[in-house]
Image 1 (cartoon, rainbow, N blue to C red):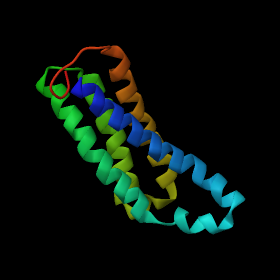
Image 2: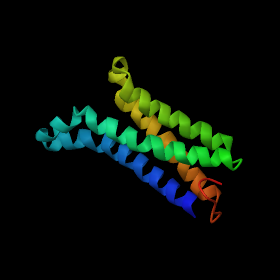
Image 3: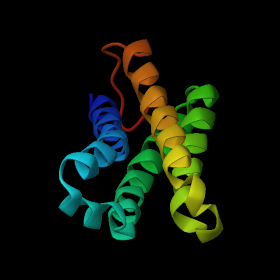
Image 4: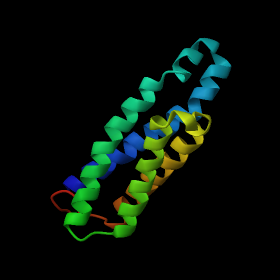
Length: 126
């Protein structure tokens, strides 16, 4: 059951990233004072710093239990896109697109794993 908890955490974190990226432009349009939040790189860094250990913990558990390498590839690709969006200033112009793509991949991987494993339980990732 613990693996489902970690997947739920990862799905929630990815969803927070997606909501942040999609709703912030709407918030800026409605309340221009919200624009100060849109330039705050710290929010993006914190979300990646929270998402990375959760994702890596689940990936480690999946690999340790002989789980799906497809899940691992999709999840790590999503995390990589999110990390690149935050970590490479030259790609700032593509930050939203990279973050959205990464968040969708990451959330999709965890959702796929959540539903494909049903009620199966394991220590960290079977």
